[in-house]
Length: 189
Image 1 (cartoon, helix red, strand yellow):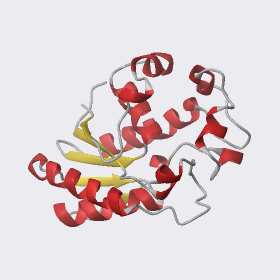
Image 2 (spheres, rainbow, N blue to C red; image 1 turned 30 degrees about the vertical axis):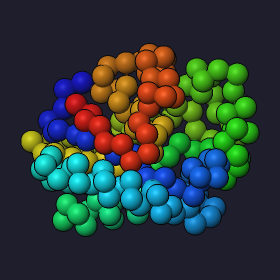
Image 3 (cartoon, rainbow, N blue to C red; image 1 turned 180 degrees about the vertical axis):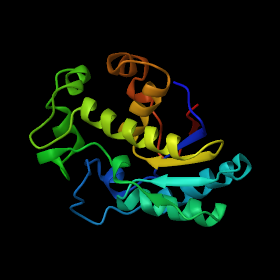
């Protein structure tokens, strides 16, 4: 995929939901803030970005990503821009429930491409949403260094899209252990 800008991605730091092993999407049902450990992780990540000449930061509106963006933005002296298309995948009726209960709804991850839990999103839905974001930003800006702060699922699907993978290829080429980790910075293109 040809892009007009250089993109970096950053997954939020450890949040309360990560520590408690529950899923959390929109609407937020509790104060899912960064943990102390998560804040320290984000500060370390922010310092690795200082030499990347970041011009713009876009962030999901969820609390844990906004807190991540605030820390990074303060260090880089950039005011983050919120875009709801960067939100975590919709977990539907499992929002704020144990992660194992949610994953137990699918026999294989491939099912998530076109199937969701009640009131949730499929991978295809999410990819359409984050692709729309990337297309709009890439059309609006040229020759910028842009940081995208979001969640594991939107970021790993966006990585696959930029590499030209289908959703099935994205899943197969990115098992859970290879997906972006909390507070990890990656070059997208």
